[in-house]
Image 1 (tube, helix red, strand yellow):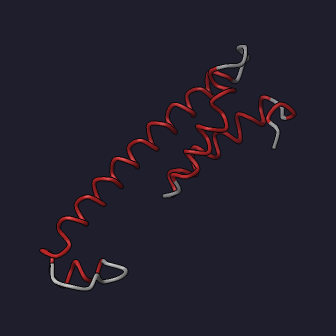
Image 2 (spheres, helix red, strand yellow; image 1 turned 60 degrees about the vertical axis):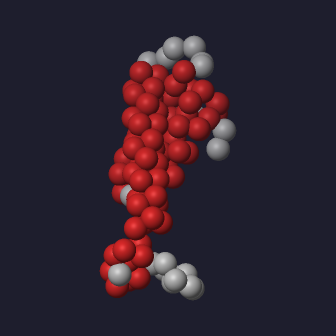
Image 3 (cartoon, one colour; image 1 turned 90 degrees about the horizontal axis):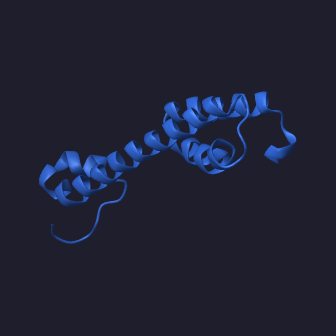
Length: 101
């Protein structure tokens, strides 16, 4: 979709939908929101809906960052502690590595 052909009200509604969709455990929507609407929020000349779009883009970026830090912490914890968790760690693993821990 070319955002230049869409009305400002529709841009705001689409940005809002992507922002709210990120709360449904879909942080990829926050990434799309930040990348797609960054220019509309911070580069183009001011217009009436721009402050709300800017707010949604900033909140999407913060949400994406929090999600990324949380995912990174979980990955680091799981990779280093899985063997110590015994059966529970094996239950959480999709594939079990061969060899000794």
